[in-house]
Structures are given as C-alpha cells and as structure tokens.
Image (cartoon, rainbow, N blue to C red):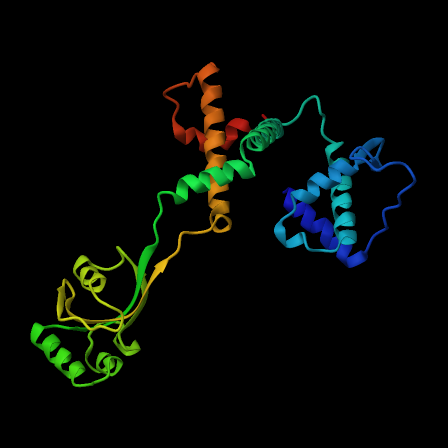
Length: 284
C-alpha cells in the first residue's frame, strides 16, 4: 500500500508539477519541518526515510519530482491517519505496527553487529584463509564425435589420421546434440562430464585426438582443443561473497548468544493452518 501511494503521488506530480522546497537560513537537520498537517509536523527525516523505501524504478527520477511526490504522499497519509482513533487502533493496524517496529529494531541491531564485526581486516583475513585451501582448477575446451559402435569410432580415428577434418566428420556422423556445431562442447571443468569421458580428456594434450572412449551414451572420439588452469580468484572478486559469509556468521553468533541468555518458550500443538484465519485479526 505504501508503494502504491508513492506511485500515485508521484504520478500526480509528474502530471501537474509542484512547488519548490523553500529553505531559510536555519541549519538543516533531520528534524527540520518541511510541512504541517493540522499542526502535526512532517520533518526532513520523514522524507528521507520514505525516499529510501521507494521501489527501484522511482529512484532515478529527478530530485524535484521525488520531493513533491514523497511529500504529497506523507501529507495524504497524515490526513487519512487523523481519521483513526490512535487510542483504539484497528487490530490489523496494531499488529502490523508491532511487526514493523520489531523488524526495524532488529535491522538496526544487525547494522550495529555488522559494523562491529565486518571490516576490511576481517574480510582480508577470511580471504587469506579461503585462498590458502584453493588451487588453480583445470578447464578443458573439447570437441567430440559420438557414434553407436566401437567399429564406427575406430573408422573415425582412421579418417582423422588420414587428414579428414574433425568438425566436418562431427557434422556428418555424430549422433550427439553437438554434432551440428562440429562436435564443439565448449569449456568445462572437472565433474561436468561422465567419468570415462573426463578421464580420457585429463590424459590428453591440447590438439590431441583420443582413441575410442565408451560411455553410457555410446562411443566417443574426442579432440582436446584447449587446456587452461583458472587462477585463484582475487580479493575483489571474492569480496561480496566473503562479506556475506562474515555477515551471516556475525548475525548467527549474535542470535545464538542472545538465545542462550534469553527465556524463550514455544507453545506446542498450534495448528499451522490457523495462519490463514484472517478473521481472527479483524475487528468485531
């Protein structure tokens, strides 16, 4: 609903425009009042927070457009909210507010935990620990011709030895899906091919052609086009992954530590289907 209201307000501004934000000489802070609704103050902080919550597609709009749209939304919300008795909120609103407040407070605590635990030094340390266990991994670029019998595969080897083109033979005789592409399989690493095929490729030299190799799919004649070793990824390449790993670890440890000292009880025997009983939170 919040995003829908934002879209509606912004669309209105796009159509009709709006007044500019006049600033005086007073220092601008998050508590600077940018509008009032029947005496209720709307501050710059309110606008900033709502700007952060906008859907991605709106964030690249000009600041002037966003300002008018966001401020219009808050004013409209204030007008509507005044009609609700704050001392006797509908149950749905009260429950939603409690959930939102809990989520926002938890998110704030996560930010504190991450600021305490995630640093360039911590990321660099984890990187060193990670790469110390890594080695360059081999990758292969190969082509193959797949036929049904060993006799056909042996005949292919002879034709290749006589100078017949590999890609030409693959397009003419291979029963595999790569045949129309000259048998090209592209680049692949260890574990991506069936064991018999992989073992044959591992023992080949670039440019070489194998003897017939039998797998569950039939008989293969393989050409190893290229071989390379992928280098150990750099710190910059692994940084997002390392940061995510540290974040999950830090938050997990924080929750575990808090859980150990907290008094937590779970009521057993509740039917999970009760989550669908929306009438339970409706006002009578």
